[in-house]
Image 1: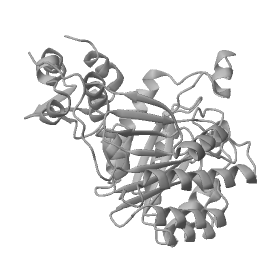
Image 2 (image 1 turned 60 degrees about the vertical axis):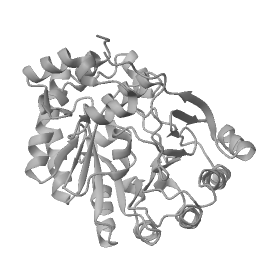
Image 3 (image 1 turned 180 degrees about the vertical axis):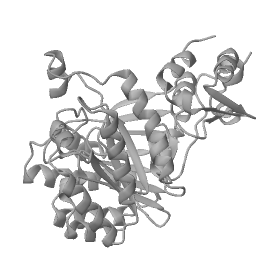
Image 4 (image 1 turned 120 degrees about the vertical axis):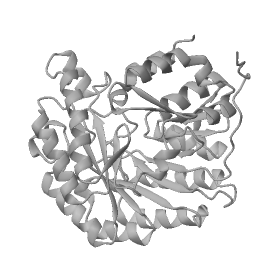
Length: 392
């Protein structure tokens, strides 16, 4: 019997990835529950940019932090005025030591990507753009409350490529009300035909706190049929594999060599630094979450150097479950030996019967010390994980 330590082993990384959260959108989508707003002014933008610089300076340890990846997400980073963005990205490059940074990702709304923005991104070292296309059907885009069109997506992608940006991800949503399988397959084919190096799939989740959630309570919209969602999941593998994009995580496909390095740290449950309102972070056994409100966060940064509103100490059990939950999402799965060293818990000893049943029924494969889910298992990932939450 393996006895778990009281706390997980601290796997300290001298150079964790950095995530910067931009909380602004030109229009907040009715399904969105992220920390973002479309109700802001010039003063809010100025305060945000200055506070990010202050928080970055505090966590950079006088330039000693050398992040391997940098990710600007949101919200919509491309909603920032181009001139302000140019200066701000330049300032962050001075604050952090980016000499070892191999990937800088920037999320963008297709409607924002003009020649000026593309030029700024290239000049400031962005290597990867994540384009929030969501669909190539204008009717679906209107249904989602998006403020861009299919034409915007095509033009944005072309501008990014013309500027020299080779690595472009395209987001595609499924499970949208009244979306059928044929429409989703067409979206996938069009994303692949563009030449996207990476495609991220997002199943629509109707959150109670959103306008979509309110509409669902009134019976005006319905959640996607589970059988249809399962068909879409299976179809995505067939369509994208045929275009050279391979599933390396349950919702992410890439041409080999173009997998997201930054997100890989999350799926390995590693350390990372979060900057900006509502951003999460993790150092050692401590998870942090910044204050969500822009002014509360900025005030905290001014008084303490960081925007942290909550700190949670993670025990070995937390680390074990989270490492399983994130690792089993990926093509590589989880390594028994790594997990044992990290948490003191042996997945084979604790969940041997569960693993035997999953492999017997074709949901998982055990290869030496490594456990990974098959396509059949990934399709029912949530149900698979429930079994690992049961103590045996």
